Length: 366
Image 1 (cartoon, rainbow, N blue to C red):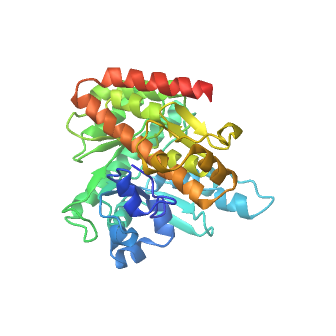
Image 2 (spheres, rainbow, N blue to C red; image 1 turned 60 degrees about the vertical axis):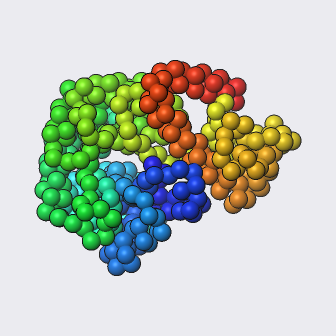
């Protein structure tokens, strides 16, 4: 799912998102609630109409940003003050108080309010409010955070069930995905997988991964909880988007992914290719009159040379950022299409092996 944090996937028009094969977008509740405001978006017809996107939209609860951005305003705007995010976030069983990253104003999120905001936005899939405890949390704290996450999930479900229909949504009833947590502790992850799976929701998410732990640890957590997840509900791994991670995640039963990496890397001149990741700033591309990725069918690779992309990125031209972003999104979305085809043909293990062999050789060469 391409990430449209502030009701836009950076540099991409909705028509172009369709061109690259986007089926569903992700929006950020925290940022949209603060700017321009959920009430305004609702008044203007909901997020779909506001951003001219006819397909499904998933919105996160905003909880991750509340905890990760809690101290940014004070630290950034008042020299001499060294305050951590934790000191500016007040956490209670009722909810969480935080300061806006934009102007320092105080706000309070409860599970119920997060559902109400997402209803105003008109998301097709909403996320439950959770506490994403740091990867290095002690087990004692991880237990407390897990209990809070489960309590909040239950309250989110109750609030969600009370909304028979959200007027801004394209569906009869918005879907709600509660989130599995538990840091890196096997028993807590299993406990959470069982609890979240038993909630009466159409899907579920796995949070608290790709936040500082090793990839081996992330994959171990996925393997640990997989036997405890229902087979008939979609599984969403939050914040993961490198090509190799998509393959490893699918192999472990994951259906949905989101990540800012394809757009963020594109803005910094880094592109995925079948032969590994390419740094367009590298001088060796200056005179190479060939596509960025000869195996890619996107319009960038069909119409522009890597020498031209190198020139645009070096000159910091907006077109260069746009083309790199376009290609990266197409690459990952096409990879998922190829994965689905390989699964349907019962050839996924072979496909994964062949893809990674070529991709990882390219990475070593880069």
